[in-house]
Amino acid sequence: MAEGSDKLQQQITEDQKRFEFAFDPVPADRRQGWFSLFLVLAGYAIAVSNFVTGAAIGYRMTFFDAMVALVVGDAFLIFVAVSTGIISFESGWSTSFLSRMVFGKKGSTIFSLLLVASSINWIGINGNTFARIVTANFPGIPIPEALLGAAIIMVWSISAMRGYKGLEIVSWIGVPIALILAIVCFVLVGVQNGGYGVILAYTPNPADEMPVVTAVSSIVGSWVFGCLITPDVCRFAKNHTSVVAAGTGAFLLGLFCLQFVGVVVAQVSGMGDFSVATAAIGLGLLVLICTLVCLCTTQDNNIYGAGLAAQNILDATRLKGKVAHRWIALAVTAASALFAACGALQWLLPIIQFLSVLLVPIPAMILAERYFVRHSKFTLEVNPIAMICWLAGGVIGQVCLSTGFSVSAIVAYVFTALLYTGLSLGFDGKISWKRDHESLTETQASDLSLDD
Image 1 (cartoon, rainbow, N blue to C red):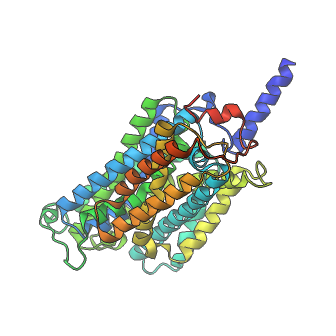
Image 2 (cartoon, rainbow, N blue to C red; image 1 turned 180 degrees about the horizontal axis):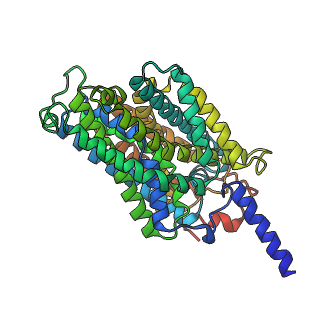
Image 3 (cartoon, rainbow, N blue to C red; image 1 turned 30 degrees about the vertical axis):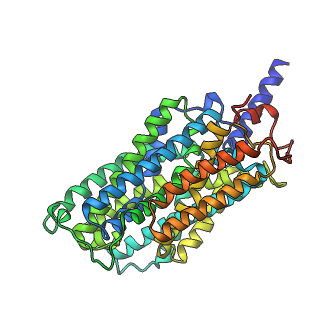
């Protein structure tokens, strides 16, 4: 009897691994140490998009204003990443399943669709960036830019298809290499065109100048999606300290440091396009290698997160538990390759500013639900309060962004958290919610509720 029970448990564990724990909390025996967590998160945050965002901002601002924007924007992003990471550690759930505590089961599929679309966007943009860097440094290369971008994206799927272990292996190799190359790049920039002294005297063209609040919104928009899917990794943590230490260190390293290099490159070269700027000052080949490594450690995480979000969508269909993680990862990769071939990079700044408004309200509601409302919607079909607050937070953020009032992302976050808390405390007990009793067992649902 015991032997049969052991075999059944072993089969259940194998099934969970096949779907990368998309439908279940990560069990204790699969949790990882803080250094493994740090490596995977650092590999994710060490992204070429941070070079690109830093250059785009540095070209349009003085050095001092650019530093203020980086500090404010990155501090907010680290707060979002660590706070949601702690909640995922406590529950063991992925980002998509975690959103059920706010949106309900069917409501969370809308959020999951947004996650998948955002992943495809970022993977496509980064593939397009890589292709641009190659053609800028090797203008005579016979391979079309669209094909180059699509090809590198397909390579990224290899590690993502292997789940957390694949992310860890790539990070062990890529993080040290990327950091060394980034440091070398920064040092070499100092001997170009007057060195670092140029940046202190740099003055942007008045026609191109960007306000600090807009720059912060761009910084938040460039990585709020990355912070939002941090729970997909942090659910493997063993304790709170690991989440705080690994998350803070990894994002400081990957976000601020790489954005800083981007600012310096733009101001020394006088160009806002990171790919063209590095080629113009003779660092094209070095940056090409660094970019390739950064992309490999980052985009597999995006593919991984999109795969988990897709499983949450499939959970409401007959395909639940029938499509393995590796095949979903491959499908996400194919869609991203197609987007890259269409020239995804041309929509970079408009997209990241839009995402800063659309995505920021979601972690605000997750935090408010977990610590202030404490009435998890995990067994509901749809939570209309969450939908109302999401829309209201997005509208407030967009108004702030279009009018230049304060930092749109931070205003939207605080507003949404307060609105969701107030409406939930006022109406949760008065509305007859329609529940989906088949979505989770009562025990599983209580894992995300603090009102027991």
